[in-house]
Length: 251
Image (cartoon, rainbow, N blue to C red; front, side):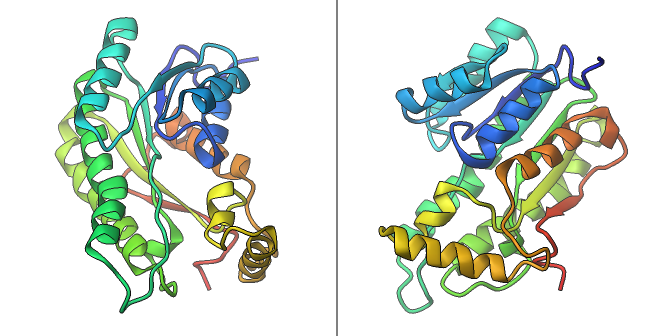
């Protein structure tokens, strides 16, 4: 059976859990050799074992320039190129207007915007014509969410970056697209509800009620969109935002 990504080299940042881990698994299933990053070695080792195949783990924090340099040098030395970049690492927390702090703003934009900019920029020397860059957006970049304005603004910035980057990379033939998940059943989403299981379950149930399809997404469902954007099946899709949201941001 032909695999869509046979012989390709891929990098997934934030690939130890949730959407990142699911995407790394799916890219590997389609034949790619996948590098994944994570800040904690034990979780990184577990993710690599779960992904299997030719997966490689590189410990590091994408908000640190020296860690990004080490990551890209590792890929350059081992592979000589990078065909697929899924700049997925990021996150955020909830604070309503009136309680927003400078630290909250700086941390959110450092993780979701600055780190994405320099992950992509440092990867570019490794990427050949035909390469695919996929950024993790969010439906919050297109709609309002209480107490989530700073995270939402950071994801709107990611969408704006993709629009300009396709023009910067026009002559190089490298595509840039954004996958914007809706509410997805991950540990990170549940933890926004609080420390208790009751509070977390309550948040997940509430969010599922907002989705026209009637449930939360599974990480594997988002991963399949990432794989599509990484493959030649999406060869004429560029600068787009693909919503994988069950209709949540469409109504």
